[in-house]
Amino acid sequence: MTIRALFFDVFGTLVDWRSSIAAGADAILSPLGHAIDCDAFADAWRGEYQPAMQAIRAGRRGYVKLDVLHCENLDAILPRFGLEELGGDAKAELNLLWRRLDAWLDVPAGLAALKKRFILSPMSNGNISLMVDLARHNGLPWDAILGAEIARDYKPKPEVYLAGCAALDLEPPQCLMVACHSSDLAAAAACGLRTAHIARPDEHGPGKGETGPSVPVDFAALDLLHLSQLLSRA
Amino acid sequence: MTIRALFFDVFGTLVDWRSSIAAGADAILSPLGHAIDCDAFADAWRGEYQPAMQAIRAGRRGYVKLDVLHCENLDAILPRFGLEELGGDAKAELNLLWRRLDAWLDVPAGLAALKKRFILSPMSNGNISLMVDLARHNGLPWDAILGAEIARDYKPKPEVYLAGCAALDLEPPQCLMVACHSSDLAAAAACGLRTAHIARPDEHGPGKGETGPSVPVDFAALDLLHLSQLLSRA
Image (cartoon, rainbow over all chains, first blue to last red; front, top):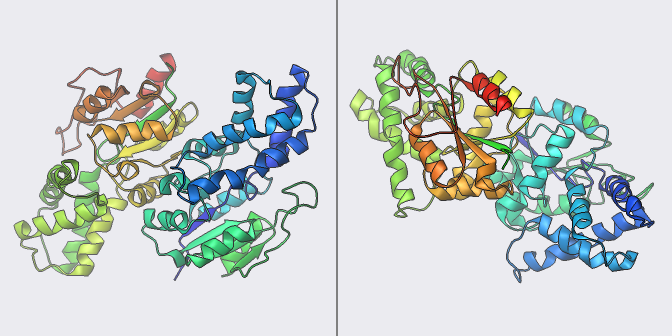
């Protein structure tokens, strides 16, 4: 079966959430007189990401958008940085940082090359409006916005990947999940999708990211331009 | 409230379904020895469109994609053209014509201009995969694919328009419904959206289309480039 569509993880795989959140938080907090370790702040905020989705995945809580979880997670970490009294405006500004994350340098050209041959969509836990803003901020040429909000559940639940395939009328082997996280790829492969790993060795800070897959994948690429080359040979 | 997003009707407003279906049907049927009136064929097929959705709107039938209704509607009209024995391959080819409809000439440049200032999405009864194929065929630069499939119901049900606003975290007055059908605009306005009419005087054949709105609208434009001008002055 020929690959027709490429599904992309976004946070980490396409955008450098850590540097963007750290720089953005510094720009918001420093003028307010808060001198904190912004890298640690970014790590702490992102650290709440997986646990926050768990109640929804487990069915103990109905679906809410990732925006809502980001707000709750921010409230959870502020005391650790002495920011429990931070005002609502500053908190709202911080939350909007997730909509202005910068893409890794290979992403715009990589997606443009891949778009010539494949349908492209995010397959992210981010909600539709967040994905739209990230795409407009970085010029990501999506054909559709699939992912968690369509399925009203969160990856790595099979329903999320399979809802994306169904929306495009494609069988799972016609869809290639692209991510820098082996766990995401393992879950997609279990649903029958094909998989491509992208190395993002600095996702969690210099030298702290996956340099290659720890699970079997169909393609292992250094970046999106490399993936485009690998797919043109496949 | 500032307009942030533009929602577009697609069949008629952005693409010339009648000429495209007629020409495509002729290209499929003539080589098979079937000489029919292809304009009448296009009109008949489209004529089944509204009634077919009614069972779903009324709740007598669960949501199925417009692709499915197009197939059923084709079977319904084939006997009228002496084509009741048409083979499955030819029928499948005919159905795919809805994914290769040509845009009106102003559409690519109009959407490109509008995209600079607004989030753009179809708000169509067409399903996601159909919208993706139409966009790739015509270079339509959508930010997201909202519409019937997201809401699992069909326009003019309020749920469809409101699901689009909710997906973008926008209030209805922040969204502008753009269509060449006054009935679509009346339904959107009843939900609180703002409205723009586009003249498509030849939608149903030469001189057979709405030259202007028959209901109150916020903007009445001759084409998408004119709409872009009107919005830049608003």
